[in-house]
Image (tube, rainbow, N blue to C red):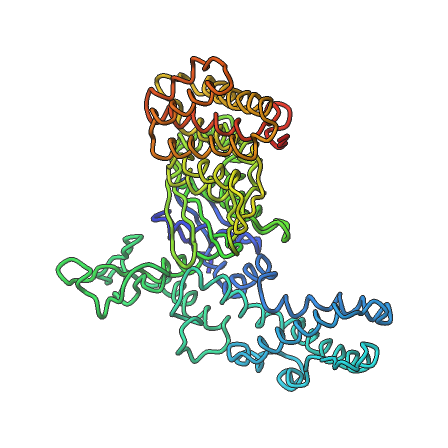
Length: 566
């Protein structure tokens, strides 16, 4: 089995499968030869591929599994035991009881019961599960009175952890975890994800269903085959393999032949391509209920490098800092790609995101890539900015990137943040300041590339800083005339100006500007008339002015807009 297998890049799902196949094989030090638009592997490397397949997912995603949630309690137990339970308090008891409920829930699930006979360990795991019972304190009880019960529970939990953490325990229990947390994001309904499968050994099921079939196909004599694979165009014996097992892809070819031309189905793939597609979840990177893949298919090297940067950023992120991690990984990958080589040129790149069990597609154009590169400091400043409306938290970084990916400007987002900033509401709590809004203005100006009346982008940055300053000086004059103006007059002016901006009414905007300057007895800055030029100029000028009217920040050269001095 030293035959070479050549696999060429194709559609985005297949390319994700190619990346996944490379990740799995290179994780076990198998050789993968990379051409410009293809990879080449040895047939020998597919021997025992199921083990390699699951080992990759378990190592990369073990913290997402029930197996990890069960075994990770061991250091906590040891800490209490080493301190003779002196540091065991009511919070510790509450944590223990929550752990017991979690462990019992997973241990008695049917999917886990199926693999227990495969685990080489002389323990009745379901018997231990039944012995696990939360410790409840009655009003007259003291924690110390139940210490012996807690110690007995620790012995049971220790046996459960040793069982789960044994070599075969981890192999099968952790595999079940990655199947239902990660792998089923990419495909479903076949092999070990087929509810009707009779094979309880998921390793054997995968090896026989995907791998052995692919090996047999590669070794077969294809001269008499009369069909062609829909993906690679290689000859194949029959049309039995379709792409319906991939999530959000394909159709039931047995029931919906109206989906194909003349009711004659030609959407079938060979066993080798089916194996590659099965590796799709290893090509995507999943984190915090989202998945992401960059189809940077200019070459295999670019495809692998870009997605591995994203993978490492997401999987190595601080667990406590999970806000915007998927988008941050995307932005970091774009920056790393740009700085990795002097010869690197920005180009259109396809972004595929898996969100709420649906795929979302965007094209990162050269212009958007340039905006991301030129707005690096402003983008980074928004990572922790957000607001809470009722029970929902909204992250400004996420909303900004969503707009860039969708090729939308930032005017509506800036408007919303300014409205939340000046509105006193019990249902809205803001976690951002005027500096964040100013940075959104700069990102927006980089996106818009300016308007004819305003000039080049660099000049636009200076211009919005100037209009922000105009707003700030108007604010100072109001406060100088009335120290309580910030509580009434400035807020009222801001509402009227924002209403004019929302309706793109330049005349209403200028009317309120004129009235405000008449009140303070000052001359209106001549450049404010730029707002009359067109709607885009009105947005650029107007939102910068209202931003300054509601606070002040230092020059971005000093702190990148991180300080709100209002």
